[in-house]
Image (tube, rainbow, N blue to C red; front, side):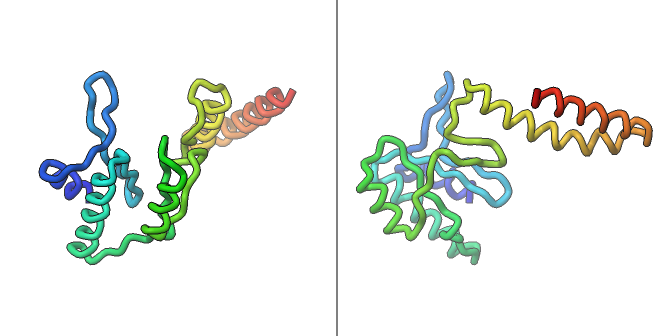
Amino acid sequence: MGRMINMTKQHVHISGFKIGSNKIDVLHLQFVDDSLILVQNDGQSFSNILTILDGFCLISGLKLNKRKWNILCINVEEELVFDFAENLGVSIGSWLMSCLGLPLGVDPKLKAFWEQVVNKIEKRLEGWKRAQLSKRGCYTYSFYVKFQDYARRG
């Protein structure tokens, strides 16, 4: 699907978002079976993306599960958002959501944003650390983790 989008955008009008000092055009992001498609609100880009998705389904024989779709808009009139969602048969999402386990729509300058990220990484590392330790090391590490948790609560 990503290749289809990239090939088609060279021939058909589809506007993504320019980011960074190099003004890189970002139209879609994909991870395993999740896709994030970013288009400008110019009507034509949205229509062209829908055509590409329909073509992808026809070629691949796969179906898109619209029950899992969310449409999220920035600076778009509410009425237009409702029309998009109704025409597609999808839900209207909220920017306070998570993508790949990380929060979206939260100010990354806030301490609470990073606490959530750090806690998630700590939990993942905890199991990995235990696997690398001896039995005594596991007991010591468990005590250390419990002590830190107790110290945080005050």
